[in-house]
Length: 326
Image (cartoon, rainbow, N blue to C red; front, side, top):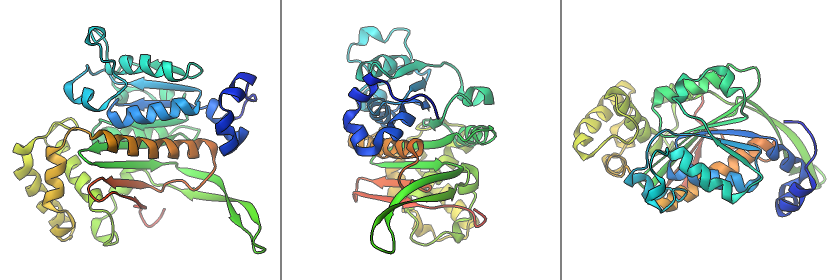
């Protein structure tokens, strides 16, 4: 993302941000290109944050029509129903986002993201997916990893009062500030190696520490159920709860893990609460925006590699779920 310096107009517009993270970080942001798939409420919050931060371009992909569920959490959808005719979610959100910052190029791409070739993803620095199956997450992550350049990959999901973020920065080099032996501030270079989504969720449950967030296991059960039933994310109801609990038992037995690690009450909340909770969308979208800014600027400790939030206890938890060889 090396390139020309910030323009005079950019410097004036982003003056406050430059004072926080520096001109070089803002220059990197202004030259970055971000792809987002799935315009849920959490993603809408992220898009708003990243457009205000001043990225170079943002491309939206979501061919779905507006639904009541979308209206309940996505503030980018205009209140005037007369403009919905013939418009996809991505198109409606695109028009709203352009008003936040006219200096950011916001556009729409139509189609099934899983069918796009590597050349398409090569145009971006960051790829973020939501509202997609586990298989699609794996597929897009692998397409990003096969490119000659590093493309950061994120997944984000929000169900009921709960949220999850997954991060794959591949081989990532960044800088952070610390105190040296003389107690003086200095900048050091750090390197992290990230596993893919497939590698992370393939780690046997029995090998994970007992303290790992119960949300991690619960989200994997829901994903497994939707995949086994051929459902799209969120196509689940209370009628499915007995089958979900049965699958939980089978997975725990196969993984040699005590069923108590995945409370039935938590699974019931995830099954029943298919709608997003707007305050949780704001929190998860804010965390995701912060992490993407870190990844682009190369400054600050990045999240490695899962983040979970549950509004019921108000806790945000970072979990490093990686195979032993990473």
